[in-house]
Image (cartoon, rainbow, N blue to C red; front, side, top):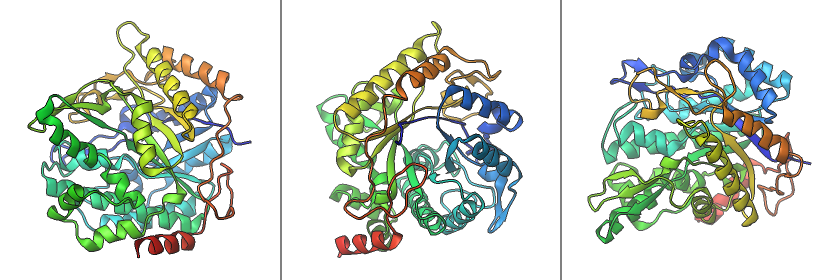
Amino acid sequence: MTYFMFSTGIENSSPKIAHGRKRIDEMELCGHYRRWREDFDLVEDLGVNKLRYGVPLHRTWLGPGRYDWEFSDLAFSDLHARGIFPIADLCHFGVPDWIGDFQNPDFPELFAGYARDFAIRYPFVQLYTPVNEMYVCATFSAAYGWWNEQLTTDRGFVAALKHIVKANVLAMYAILAVRPDAIFVQSESTEYFHAENPRALGPAELLNERRFLSLDLNYGWRVNSEMFRFLMDNGMTLEEYDFFMREHLKSHCIMGNDYYGRNEHNVTEEGKTSSSGEIFGYNEITRQYYERYRLPVMHTETNTCEGPSGDEAVRWLRKEWANVLRVRNSGMPIVGFTWYSLTDQIDWDIELREARGRVWPVGLYDLDRKPRAVGKAYKQLIKDWREVLPAQSVCLTVPLAPYGAGELGVAVRPIEAERTEAQASSG
């Protein structure tokens, strides 16, 4: 029997700030390079059976076909020996210096080559997140001006978005050529925008369509006329749009969605946004995404600060878990839950925009690897629920017969069948 996937993750963001002069490396800041064995011990002790884990891309990928696999070999071999299944996180908000940034049109093809070589080197890996939070990466890098290219234009945003999503799609094809039963867990931020008054309804409606763009392109969903015009006016070509509609690999995917209290926003009539805090919550927003894409769901990120009383994070864990059960009981096939991350983080309270070195206490463990209250609560939650909550039957291929089941026992289909169906639907 395939059981529900309880998970955590090692935070491995690596964007550049200060106009490219400084790299933020969360694995280094949080001590993982020195304490990785200890971190994996904690993962085992928690009882999770999946770990969101990625290589330090900027240290590993030295150029086209050139790699330094030393640290990755140690880490992934150890995970394999322990029987911990990694959800391989290949690109988390940053690229190597030699790529430049997400405006580089060569990035998608180059990244596909890297993904192929990774899959060849680690053939035991079945679960992948090729590019983490594509919408957030494009927004923070090219719309808000915080990371990497630090642009604040619609044209910059569309360029980053199309390159990031194309990289994700091509990487999936490249991995499937090596491991045909690979499963792709999109870890994508799920958002909602609330109008502050009737005059803000128009701006809120536009933002509530824009939030879907990364997954629309990734899954081959035809965008509405307003979003199509937005893409075309800001540099996407018809040929590029047709690629996304034709070449998606939706039937190999689990829709991983990330939800935090800051994922809901107020919108003014001028289109300015601010955090609204939790209004709808995970269940309702997940329903909106599920009804659009009709894919199995995994809650791939959540956390909150421990807070002055020490129990805020525990209350948030219980609330999110209640929402996961509500999603499941509503008939949506949800297959996993993740508290992110294993340890506290550095400077995520300011979205890594500056290098202040301030600890953000959102981990299951602090940076001395001592358990926080939420870590103890999560360990107990897993113990209580793992034997009574097998994953709902998840078949990513209907109605074709299974093509090869891996560790998950999830059926997938040949790439050729995916291409044929996509071409037929677009023609």
